Image 1 (spheres, rainbow, N blue to C red):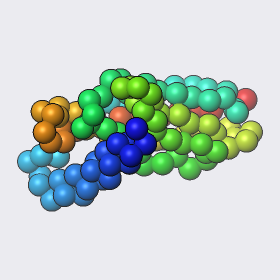
Image 2 (image 1 turned 90 degrees about the vertical axis):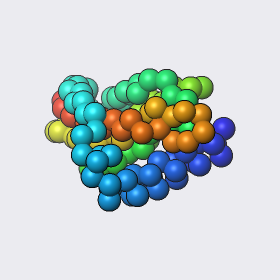
Image 3 (image 1 turned 30 degrees about the horizontal axis):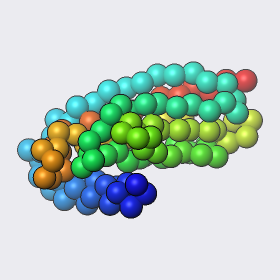
Image 4 (image 1 turned 30 degrees about the vertical axis):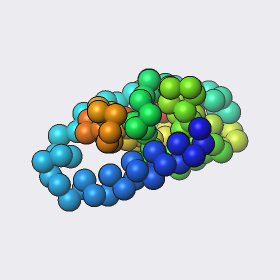
Length: 122
């Protein structure tokens, strides 16, 4: 399972790099913004949903103040987890890139950019 996830992550990164030169593929990716508020030292999780074996997600922009910021595949779901730096209060922004639409033989062509805007309070 870890090997598959690593291969997917590498493939996703390669696809993102190679696709950046092709304007027609990336010009209009699907985007969505999630706004959430958590308390200092609280864990935030965002479920990106179910993904096929050839599909995946990566963190395209890491937050600044974090103890943990990671993506994990839980069976066929992908979940992003964020834990702020100890006692941090303020704002964070994370950007996740996911690729869907695989035909089973190749990586998908449906790119989704999810921007998570967190407010961390006392």
